[in-house]
Amino acid sequence: MPRFGELEAAIMRAVWASPTPVRVRDVLEALRKERDVAFTTVQTVMEILFRKDWLDRAKQGRAYVYWATASQEDYATALVEEALESAPDQAAVLSRLVERMPDDERAGLRAALDEAKNREGLT
Amino acid sequence: MIVASALLAYAALLAALGPSVVRRARWVEQAPRLGIAAWQALSAAFVVSLVLGGLALSVPDLRLGTGLAELLRACLAAVRAQYATPGGAVIGASGAALAALVLLRCGWRMAATLLRAVAERRRHRQVLRLLGSRLHASGAVLIDHAVPAAYCLPGIRRQVVLTTGALDALSERQLQAVLAHERAHLRGRHDLVAAAALALSSAFPGLALFRAVSEETVRLLELVADDAAARSTHRLVAAEAMLNVAGQPEPAGAFAAGGTGTGRRIQRLIAGVPPLGRVPTALAGGAAAALLALPLGVFAGPAAALVDTACCVDGTMAISHAEVCEAMPTTRECLTR
Image (cartoon, rainbow over the protein chains, first blue to last red):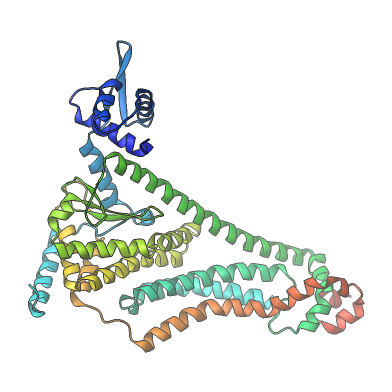
């Protein structure tokens, strides 16, 4: 029995990998290449993903077809934006390495760094 | 009343002078960890003075240097005296209310801040997991994204997160410095330190003291992590790593105007700061300890005596009014008769 979170991720990967909307049966087929999983399990998890707003769906015949509400790239961008733009009062949530800097400040620091490296014999 | 006034005046003094002390201190650049501890002591001293000051108001005639025996005999009559007059009762009740309010407010903001952080991190982790995140050899989670970024998700399931863009922008040693920076945050539970400071600042929204302390704490935590990165490699390697990660043009959304704390951090690494000497370290540590010890000491002496009397109330019942007046002539009840 795979962990629930892994199954969610695997289903999302399968949905993202497909160029067209998918049925539960299609996802099941893709998942069975890697793991043993029951149809009803996949169906349930896909319904959960729909309720969490990660999947959207429409009735087609007697079954639903599902598609992702946003692309994998969109999710990645949102995560990185969140990490980079987090306000100071969110410091407790996550901590990013650096803030963005204006070009001129960056150039000035780069020059100072190169000078220090030369002085200390570091290249 | 003297103890209460002294404690509340001390709190007011800290609130008035604290912000400029916090913002002007230069030695913290050389000892960021000690700096954080000092500002924590300063914050605690303020809260403790308020709470103890309130408590001192709510119990009668807590005076500096009161003898145990005197208090023992006078306690019952004194309590009766304070709460017998309307003015005394009001002062006593508002003192207790002040202490309770400060404690409740701090506790509530602390819990709210932590709960919110946990919820937001859980959501962030969910999306991370959903993306089918790959693991880098270092144990960090990789996000496929061109913008270089490195950050950490603190908590029980702590995690360093890197973008593929960061991997492209960093050499192997620079990556080592970045990882050392993030791991220093995780290992030191810097999220909790920041959360405590931010919670205090939100518990007293108008107070410049806690705003200064929280801003400085967040900044100093970065310096602690920068120093860890410098130690793990070389300070110039760490500086270049930060420049490379910060150095990419932003695709969307500008940085906060003038918010170039990062620039100052990189400058600090390039220049190199020597660790704080032994004497200044001892001085700063001693001063921080004294800040907090003062209100505790002022309150603890007389309070200890008072607590003792509470444990032997049955004995005081037998003491006559005349005896109380003799032992404690300043008690209001005696004066009014």
